[in-house]
Length: 263
View 1: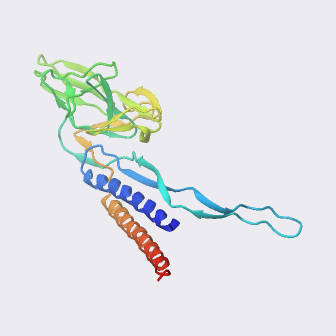
View 2 (view 1 turned 120 degrees about the vertical axis):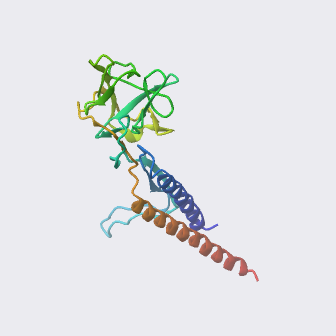
View 3 (view 1 turned 135 degrees about the vertical axis):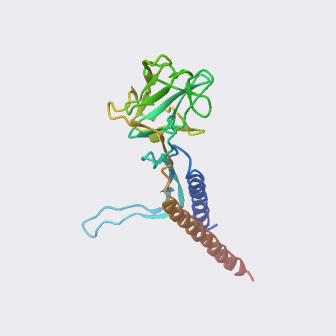
């Protein structure tokens, strides 16, 4: 069989994966804290017809002669650039502007997220949509009593409220996790990430310290997906897929001609 046919098949598989990633990006264009994916490719092993030869006294050197055998998936990267800001006016919506991730605790597992849509549960603790607790700098939960007259979140993550007796109280300070390679985190669904060995965990810091983000209350960080970019990538993947199908079709026609030589 022709090598070009298998190269075309490998190209089709790669562009199918690219379309999967682009489709997921577009589906999450309005998802809070979502970070877009990007596909990269690598060439596969090449078949060497003749190796390189060094120069001699009588002639110059000769380059190797190799035939490529197609492409393969190189990586699917998570691009952790800053997402767009959406003002909501909800005091329990927190946007992170800069580096760092919220820390959540639930079912004995620690999660990380950039989605800042939080709520108060029946125990007056700040939780996310899954009921996981937002962690404070002291390792506990942040509680705002039901009888509090009002509350406020400063840019350094400090949560204060006015108690029923009119006194100012501090509920806690939001903790942020730092990663030198946030792209190495493992997606767990529901806008959550899990620790991985390649995330480069650098410990916990308060907002606005050690290069971490500041907290903006009343706003959400939206997806960093750019629709114009994704549509361009979709067209590229579509044309690449079509070109590889043409390679297979042409290879099939050549094989048909070889079969017809018998007649």
